[in-house]
Length: 122
Image 1 (cartoon, rainbow, N blue to C red):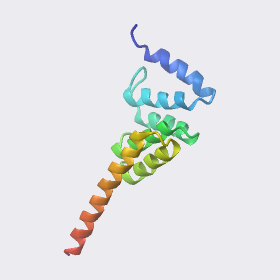
Image 2: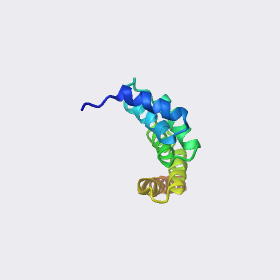
Image 3: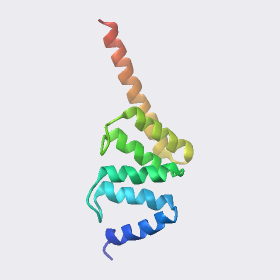
Image 4: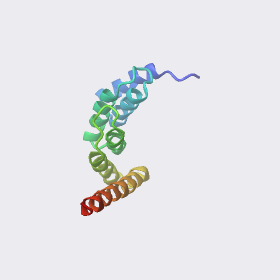
């Protein structure tokens, strides 16, 4: 059976009107990937934020991903880290979020240390 992303969007929209945060997050995914709808990172962010605001950890993670990559928003790794942390706190079993926190924290600390050593040499 072939995948019908337009039909999926219809059902996700109905479910999102009922307040289902998983559907809101999934609408964001369809917009981010351009499946059944034209690719639109800003709309993806809107839907991820809707899901995140009601406690959906995957939505929080996806907000962080867009900030980290700069898709549809100005790239901001500090904001990305904050959203990854929220996702990890919202779902203690969300290992992908915990890993993203660890990896991005390490990267930012390394960049901070590199910048400090460059400034010390001036």
